[in-house]
Length: 109
Image (cartoon, rainbow, N blue to C red; front, top):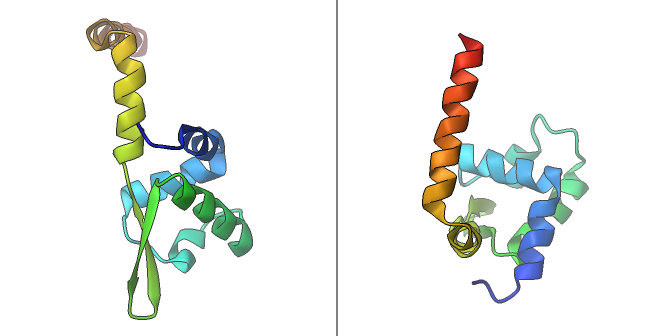
Protein backbone atom coordinates (compact mmCIF):
# COMPACT_ATOMS: atom_id res chain seq x y z
CA UNK A 1 0.00 0.00 0.00
CA UNK A 2 1.19 3.55 -0.66
CA UNK A 3 2.54 5.32 2.38
CA UNK A 4 -0.03 8.10 2.18
CA UNK A 5 -3.34 6.54 1.20
CA UNK A 6 -5.23 9.72 2.16
CA UNK A 7 -3.48 11.63 -0.65
CA UNK A 8 -4.43 8.90 -3.11
CA UNK A 9 -8.12 8.92 -2.19
CA UNK A 10 -8.17 12.73 -2.13
CA UNK A 11 -6.66 12.80 -5.62
CA UNK A 12 -9.18 10.29 -6.96
CA UNK A 13 -12.15 12.03 -5.34
CA UNK A 14 -12.18 14.94 -7.79
CA UNK A 15 -13.76 14.45 -11.25
CA UNK A 16 -11.34 16.94 -12.83
CA UNK A 17 -8.36 14.94 -11.62
CA UNK A 18 -9.94 11.69 -12.79
CA UNK A 19 -10.40 13.31 -16.20
CA UNK A 20 -6.70 14.18 -16.30
CA UNK A 21 -5.84 10.59 -15.42
CA UNK A 22 -8.15 9.37 -18.20
CA UNK A 23 -6.43 11.70 -20.66
CA UNK A 24 -3.03 10.38 -19.63
CA UNK A 25 -4.29 6.82 -19.92
CA UNK A 26 -5.42 7.54 -23.48
CA UNK A 27 -2.20 9.36 -24.43
CA UNK A 28 0.61 9.09 -21.90
CA UNK A 29 3.46 11.59 -21.74
CA UNK A 30 1.68 14.90 -22.33
CA UNK A 31 2.82 18.44 -21.63
CA UNK A 32 0.74 20.84 -19.55
CA UNK A 33 -0.37 22.57 -22.74
CA UNK A 34 -1.55 19.32 -24.28
CA UNK A 35 -3.44 18.37 -21.13
CA UNK A 36 -5.16 21.78 -21.07
CA UNK A 37 -6.49 21.45 -24.63
CA UNK A 38 -10.26 20.94 -24.82
CA UNK A 39 -10.74 21.26 -21.05
CA UNK A 40 -13.07 23.63 -19.26
CA UNK A 41 -10.33 24.38 -16.72
CA UNK A 42 -7.80 27.15 -16.55
CA UNK A 43 -4.12 26.34 -16.91
CA UNK A 44 -3.69 27.20 -13.21
CA UNK A 45 -6.43 24.75 -12.21
CA UNK A 46 -4.84 21.96 -14.27
CA UNK A 47 -1.47 22.75 -12.66
CA UNK A 48 -2.99 22.50 -9.16
CA UNK A 49 -4.67 19.19 -10.03
CA UNK A 50 -1.42 17.81 -11.43
CA UNK A 51 0.43 18.75 -8.23
CA UNK A 52 -2.08 16.78 -6.16
CA UNK A 53 -1.84 13.84 -8.56
CA UNK A 54 1.96 13.95 -8.28
CA UNK A 55 1.75 14.10 -4.48
CA UNK A 56 -0.40 10.95 -4.60
CA UNK A 57 2.16 9.36 -6.94
CA UNK A 58 -0.50 8.92 -9.64
CA UNK A 59 1.41 11.14 -12.06
CA UNK A 60 5.17 11.24 -12.58
CA UNK A 61 6.99 13.83 -14.64
CA UNK A 62 10.06 13.67 -16.82
CA UNK A 63 11.87 16.53 -18.48
CA UNK A 64 12.66 16.18 -22.17
CA UNK A 65 14.69 19.24 -23.00
CA UNK A 66 12.50 22.18 -22.05
CA UNK A 67 9.30 20.12 -22.01
CA UNK A 68 7.89 18.64 -18.83
CA UNK A 69 6.02 15.45 -19.70
CA UNK A 70 3.36 13.96 -17.43
CA UNK A 71 2.90 10.20 -17.21
CA UNK A 72 0.24 8.10 -15.53
CA UNK A 73 1.52 5.83 -12.75
CA UNK A 74 -1.10 3.06 -12.34
CA UNK A 75 0.70 1.29 -9.47
CA UNK A 76 -1.07 3.09 -6.58
CA UNK A 77 -4.48 2.37 -8.14
CA UNK A 78 -3.51 -1.27 -8.58
CA UNK A 79 -2.41 -1.47 -4.95
CA UNK A 80 -5.72 -0.04 -3.76
CA UNK A 81 -7.69 -2.39 -6.01
CA UNK A 82 -5.75 -5.40 -4.75
CA UNK A 83 -6.32 -4.46 -1.13
CA UNK A 84 -10.01 -3.60 -1.37
CA UNK A 85 -11.25 -5.96 -4.06
CA UNK A 86 -9.42 -8.84 -2.44
CA UNK A 87 -11.45 -8.25 0.71
CA UNK A 88 -14.68 -8.65 -1.22
CA UNK A 89 -13.69 -11.80 -3.07
CA UNK A 90 -12.74 -11.02 -6.63
CA UNK A 91 -14.40 -14.20 -8.00
CA UNK A 92 -17.84 -13.27 -6.68
CA UNK A 93 -17.54 -9.76 -8.08
CA UNK A 94 -16.49 -11.15 -11.47
CA UNK A 95 -19.57 -13.39 -11.56
CA UNK A 96 -21.83 -10.46 -10.61
CA UNK A 97 -20.21 -8.21 -13.22
CA UNK A 98 -20.73 -10.88 -15.90
CA UNK A 99 -24.37 -11.30 -14.87
CA UNK A 100 -24.88 -7.54 -15.07
CA UNK A 101 -23.40 -7.47 -18.59
CA UNK A 102 -25.70 -10.27 -19.71
CA UNK A 103 -28.77 -8.62 -18.23
CA UNK A 104 -27.90 -5.30 -19.82
CA UNK A 105 -27.36 -7.08 -23.14
CA UNK A 106 -30.83 -8.63 -22.95
CA UNK A 107 -32.47 -5.23 -22.41
CA UNK A 108 -30.55 -3.69 -25.34
CA UNK A 109 -31.63 -6.34 -27.82
